[in-house]
Length: 286
Image (cartoon, rainbow, N blue to C red; front, side, top):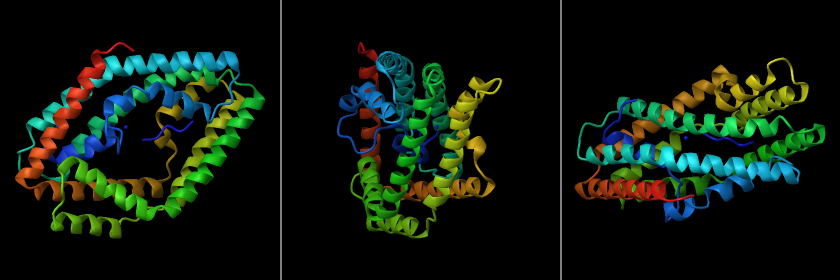
């Protein structure tokens, strides 16, 4: 099961670029259209890992629907409030990396709420799986890890284009100075996908081993692994992630400090558009 990384104070302009990138579905032209298919997307992706029978698939669909309804009704209004606050502070020129720490905490809070809810809905289904299904889960996770590693090692240029596309989505056309900032970030960032893969394998081994052996209190152990996979991070991997976050904060602060009046207006408009979409979605029936 691939639960990737979404993250008390509402922050100012510096937080905007980072938080919306992590909160929203990247590269989509209509958040309402995409969100309307979230339950289908979740069902499809979870089924890539879990080899379920008919009754289990029906239960999975019900649990995913429940999560989607909960998220729509309770979480989207929080996101809208947050983005509107950010939009109200777009013209604040005080942009420091320290403020981005606040945003990371807030986004962590949003992400944690969703992970807890989804884990509590799906874990009763996962623990019902028999030995054959657990074997298939282990194989599916292994194949996904290998494929993910291959894609990462081959897609540097694609990631560079996506990075710029995201920046332009929030700020509009970038200046030559901002392009140079991004080039420097991409040239100096040192992320080792093999170390990430090692951590993912460590997590998968712990989860599947616990699911197989079912020691006393195993359901609580599985829940903890789903909610807090960072508990298994090695010290060197944690340091790498901390360094990457620090680099992202510095870049975000530099870009936003250099933003032109037109870019700030574009950012404010985009934030308010997303907030409006979230409020419309939250008011809809599932």
